[in-house]
Image 1 (tube, rainbow, N blue to C red):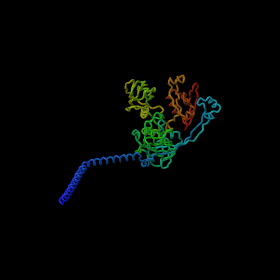
Image 2: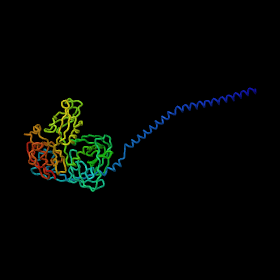
Image 3: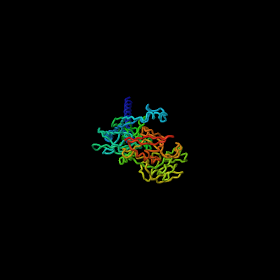
Image 4: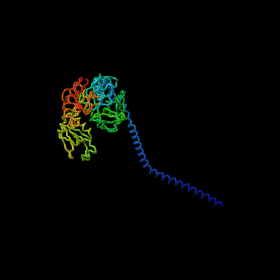
Length: 506
């Protein structure tokens, strides 16, 4: 019995020792496996760590970019504000003249009672109203030359320029160009002024930040910011439309003010808005304005090159009619007699595809390029005629009537009419006996001509007793009109011939 008990104790002891040994072995194996796993996982963790670090850097970069999307313009604006001015104008607006005594006739220009009122009431004296205006401008030289819009100062008798520091100066018009709506005025400052730097408007890209500073609604030194929304906009304001569109808020009073890029350079002259739209403003590209300002500063006038063609865009319908495909350029619809184009051999139906080494895709491109050339320049013109490419050399002339309004000392102001030489076709349509004279095709509303009573369709036969046979005679006569004196226009209107007095104000 004792032996059996002893054997049982020894067996239990032996089993316990074996069990402990197995557990120890399992722990060692587990440890080995764990070590193997650690060795296998270690390089993967390092790669993950590097990837995570890279991802973090990228996220931080994105954060920086997001912060840069809304930059602060404070330092830039602080530097630019002294170069921007407010412009206040006053002038006398004259109304009345040959209007009926009881207000505007409901019959318009064909009023059957017009002759009656004129016979019994005579000429009704004009009433004068004092009119004030506001605008903006920017200083381009230390000695006081200021650029603004023509429409800001055009009919002003007195112009006052107000600097950022509140100093006020009377300004004199050095020159103005209605065709591009650019004007240059001059003040005599007490000291040196802070002038702007010109940028390159051709380098602007859609989406670039821009800043407008001006005098909207008389609130001087107002700063707005936005982006370039589009370029090359044509608004139908003239032959040289090529506007920068921006959503930087531009309001009445901003006209003539600068549009800056983020380098603090002027890239445009704020000019127009669409009243029924929000966030739609337009600026003249500074590259165009610069060339105009240089001429105004030198001579007070703008002389433009002249090719002598009437051009139009090639529409799909026109392309189909001409049986042309994939051809870019502009179509010559007419050629002015005795013009540089006619002398060079350009004819109606030609397609101008290149002007002096630059491709032509749009009508405005060609008109702007031609106008920017000096008269007398020889240029190379590539065109397509009957499917074949031709090259001609043209000696540019001077665009008729482009000695744009100056300060009035040397060049007479336009009376507000557009005329055209009478062709046989026009003579036939107007039932004229001959083709002498020039026909009025447009009268500007509110102009001197409109107030005097000139109308579209009138044929001008004489100005100041000088016969008008063609456009050359007309231009010479207009240049010789004396300001402050009435000049008689002999006009054929329908079957009648009448005299109309036109008076240019001093």
